[in-house]
Image (cartoon, rainbow, N blue to C red):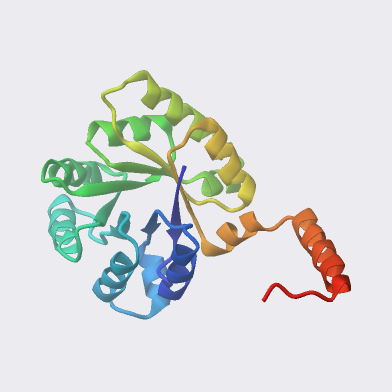
Length: 218
């Protein structure tokens, strides 16, 4: 499974990339706004840190506006993946951009039918939001299972399932068990994956025993 980090915080991305935990990055207008910087500058710097796909989202809602913004964003760096919403205009933009060889991430997917439409439009990635579905009492991971099954039924569909709105480690584990190809996680959730009380307890015991020997490695 590929790990994308869901943030526009360059320092976080750099730190996680140094640990080999970043295969790509996803951003959105809200995350870029939090950075307090120009979108083009943020995306360019992120693209210089990771060679993987970096999702930069359009803000236009009409087809022509999305195309114009998408074409502008893809000029920032070769690894920019233009993110468009799962609307009719978004799918039309996806179709045109994909035909030009641009990576496209179709976002805000909440149903298997929407995911099928995104694949038909040539999306590189489709982003189902599991956490937001859970918030309204719907089974977010059930959506992932349905999309993965549908895509597997049709070998000509090349769209990757990019699980988004991940709130906790079990979302990631469940998505991996279902066979989703990509997950995008906030930095805090990636760090949660590292922690287990038995790991901490075991390390503490090993170091205590080592201190008793009075030795040093260097």
